[in-house]
Length: 80
Length: 246
Image 1 (tube, rainbow over the protein chains, first blue to last red):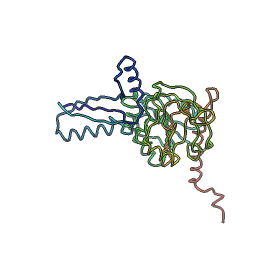
Image 2: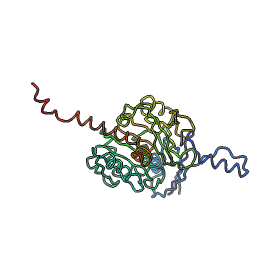
Image 3: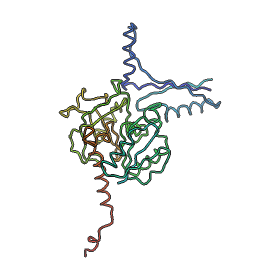
Image 4: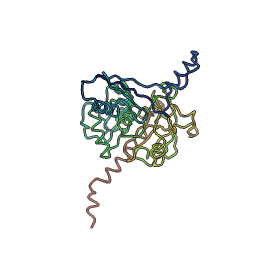
C-alpha cells in the first residue's frame, strides 16, 4: 500500500520560491501563468492494513511530522 | 553558572557558543550530545545554530525527536532558561516550545551580514542588561529566517511583550529595507509566555569580542547570568549574620 502526501504552503505564507518560478515561467513566454506555489510530495510505502485506520495513521504522520501546520497544509491519498 | 550547549549532527555554532560562555564570560559550559538525555545538572541551555540533521524535511523538524530534546522540554516545563539561536530558534519553534515558524528568506538568498535589532522589552531574564529601545549591532547568517505566525498569534505576542528583538535601521525604525529576511512585523526574536524560553535569528555568540566585530551579544548572556545569580541569592540559606539577629 502507498500513501501519497502533498504538503503545500498555507495561503498567506510568503512563498518566494513559487514567486521566482512564476516569474521564470512568464519570462519563458508562458503568459497564462498566474500564482505558483511550491510544496513537497512524499511517498510512503505501508504494510497492508485496514482502510480507515490507515488513513487515520497517515493523517497522524502528517500532523506530527510531515507538515508544520503553522505554515503548511497537507492532503493525502492512500492506494495500492 | 553551568551552561549546556546542545550538539546535533550538523550543529556548527556550538563551539562558538561554548567559547563565548567559557572563555569570554567565565562560565562553565558543557556539550550535551543529542543522543544523551542527561542534562548534566546545567542551569541554562543553549540550542545552537547550524544545520541539524541537514535541515531535512524542514529546518529543525528532525532535531525535536532526539533524546536530548525530550529532556530540554522537561527542563523548560520546569522553568529552566533555554535560548535557541538561529537553527536553535527553528528547532524550538518546531518543537512547539515557541510560537510561529521560520520560513525561507524573502530574497531566497542566504544572508550573512551585521544587522541592527531594537530591544523591544528589556524587562525579561534575557534582556535585562539592555535598555528598552536600545539598538544592538549583531550578525545574522541564515537562509530560513523569515518569521511567520498568524495575525492573532502576532497580536498576542506583541500584547504580552513576547517580541524581544525587531530588525531596525540605524535610527531604530523597523523599515521594510531594514528587514533582512521578510519576517512579519520585522520580528527577530520571541519569548514564550512564561518568559523562560527565547529564540532569535541573530547570533549573540558571534558578537562577544571587539576583535571580531562587536560585543553587544554579551548583554544577552550577561542578562541570564544576572537573573540566575539573583535567583540563587534569593533561594540561598540566610547568612549567619541574619540568623544571629534577635
